[in-house]
Amino acid sequence: MNDSPSILVVDDDQRNREMMAEALNQAGFEVDTARDGVEAMSKADVIPYDAVLSDIHMTPYSGLDLLDSFRKTMPEMPIVLLTAFGSVDTAIQAMKQGAFDYIAKPVNLDDLVVTMKRAVDHRRLIENNRTLNRAFSDRPRAASLMGQSKKMVEVFKLIGKVAHSRTAVLIQGESGTGKELIARAIHDNSPRSIHRFVAVNCSAIPDSLLESELFGHTKGSFTGAHSMRHGLLEEANGGTFFLDEIGDLTPAGQAKLLRVLQEGEIRRLGSNESVRVDLRIIAASRRNLAELTGAGRFREDLLYRLNTVTIVLPPLRERPEDLPLLAEFFLARYGDQKEVPVTSFSSSAMQALGEYSWPGNVRELEHVVERAVALATHAILSIDDLPPEVLQKGKRTPNHSPILPGTLKALQREQVVKMLEATRGNKERAARLLGISRRTLYRLIDRYGLGKPQAATETDASDPMSS
Image 1 (cartoon, one colour):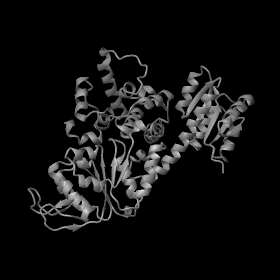
Image 2: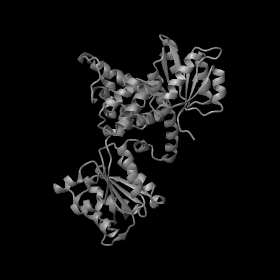
Image 3: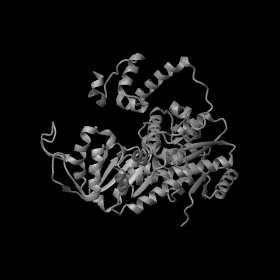
Image 4: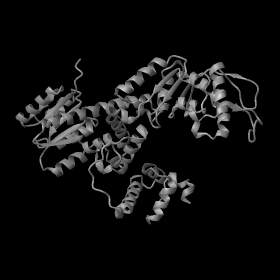
């Protein structure tokens, strides 16, 4: 079976049709041709093409007619249209109707090949996303596990090797790289998958409550302990327990966790009795635990117990070949939520994403794409839809005109207005996409005299900030 991507080339000009088909053939595509839209639809009903390249100006069935038919019968088929140079209105109409891209005539064959490769990748990505979303339907951030870079492939291999063992695993990586998803993948591929996966972020629980949360407590063990409570470690019995940011665990908590690893038992606060537990510990940290150990802030014996197997997750800036794949994944997720779906990136937008250093890693990329989709007004996400920090803080600063100080307030007001319109007045989502707190958003609304929205959303109705 030939795995080469298949392209259908549609053009009523035989010379152009054969020229483009030959160029695509030489680039490794399997190419079929059709002389008009009627023949194209007839062939597409039988053969599952990966993408279609069609001229717009054909009779009696134009490329726009063909696009409209495919949108109804094969909505996921990427359609690339050819248009005469200067036919701007036609090109815009094509994108509004859902074309993947358009190419101006006369055709640059190198650009043609690049565009069709993008179209094929987009189609296959949608299919992969559907499979991935089914597999991870209860874990909406599973995209962080996507990757084709050498570093991520090595991570996937290591997951497969350690999943069936009982050994503790330490996952190290920057914030936003997907450490919890790696832990879940280990759990899901292990014999413990029939039991619970329990996760706790050590930095998100106050020190005074952390030990009680992990190990449980007896009635009366401290003020407010009105009844006995099982800890999270006990609830994970038989399954996997994931400790995120373990470097923030208190010294007393470290000592008790070491006991769990050594003896397989816990002791609730206020109790002298031990409870046996059978669980696998997976820990993660954004900080270097060896350095914390050297500084006396982390137990050396606990570190030895935890790092039997260490998985190091690379930051997004060190896996640039994965960025287009991830960006397209998030675009497929959020683009369909628009009344006019956003289906692809412009080349300049994708280039800008590639030039940014992504300090927030995959989590930041998802946020940026979601925000850009909310503001986009066309089927193609353009560079103008991206936030300023992506354009100004890349590895190479794009050549944009400087923003004059006198325009900053106007630009800020415009961004707030656009985001409130894009989210239909949902201030919680608007604040999240703007990267600010709801309190800050309310201050900006007051500062710029935007007034109160006509009708509060369900989210705002219960928001104490709105009163």
